[in-house]
Length: 293
Image (cartoon, rainbow, N blue to C red; front, side):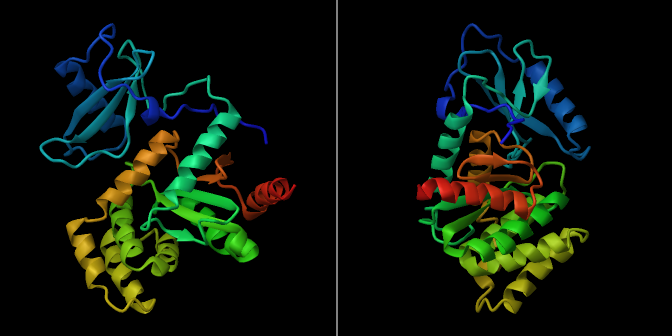
C-alpha cells in the first residue's frame, strides 16, 4: 500500500520529564496568548477559559507539547498541541521521520493487542483472533458512521472468529456533544458490553439530534436491548465515572499520533480514511494469507 502519511514516533514512550535547559521557556504571557489563539482557531465557546497546565520539551528538540484544561477546573482538553521552537507555529501533530513503516506497524500492533486485555474496552470477537481491527471514532463524525457499520457488521459477519474489532473513543474538540456521548457509551460498555454495539450504531444514525435527546435515548435503547438493570449505567453517566476510559483512549491515540476520525488500524497498519468494506477486506485477506504461510 502506498503510504501517504508521515509515520510518527510514539511520543509518550520517549517523553522527557523535564524541560531541556537549552530551550527557551514559555512565559505566562505567552501561555495566555497561545490559549486565546487555540480557543479562537479550534472553535471553543467564547465563554470558555483555557489554561496551559503542562509544557514539556520533546526529546532532542525544543518543540513543546502543551496540555490544556478549562481554567479553574480539573476538566482537561482531550487534544494536545505542539509548539515550534520559536513559539510561532502551533500544530496538532509532531512528526519524527526516523520511524520506518514496519517499525510503526509493529509498535502500533503491540499496543493495540495489549489494549484488548482491558475488560472495559468495546470489542467484538476474541482477543486471540489472528487479525485485530481497531477503530478510533467520534460519535458526531459523519464519516465514522459508515466506517463503524463496515467493521461492526460486514467485516464481523464475513470473518467471524478470524477478526477481533475494538472501538476507541476519540471525541474531537470541535464537536459539542461527542465527549458526552463517549462518556455515556463507555458507561454502557462497562456495565453491559453486548449492548454497546447496537446502541452505538443507533447514535451514529441519529447524529442530527441534540445530546439531550441522545442521552435520554441511550437509556431507552439499553432497556430495549434487554439490559436488565440500567441503574448502574445511569449512576456512571451522572458521575462521569467512565472518564478514565476516554482518557485512556485519548492517550493511546496520542501515542500512535492519531488525531483525526475515523482512523482504522488493521494489525497496526493504518488504512486510508473512510475506507469501504472492500478495501478493508483486501487488507485482511492479505494478512491472513501471510499468516498462513
